[in-house]
Image (cartoon, rainbow, N blue to C red):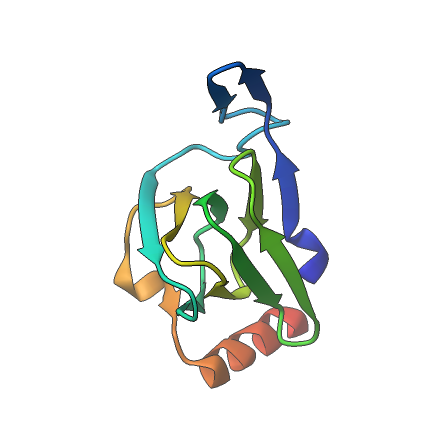
Length: 138
């Protein structure tokens, strides 16, 4: 399951006065229909996330600063460094994700394939492990 977490590179167009990153729904881009987008900003030392989803897939994009994302399928962990706005980390359901903000004023844009549903969140790691073990059995 950890191999289902993927880093996706998006096109970036560099000009004399800056850069433009393009995010499009496509096979090579955002691989799902977009239902929700939100932004999170925090400072160095903050830890956010610390949950998984039953159904929601998310694409995490560091739009400013530097954020370390640890993904965990309850058997394996993988760490990703997000520090460029033209890269996104695809986190499918049943992956525990934790974001460690490494610089002040770091911000992350999160693109989701589902609307906000409180019952879709797994915020207890023990319950997450139980859920994943049930998936493996089926």
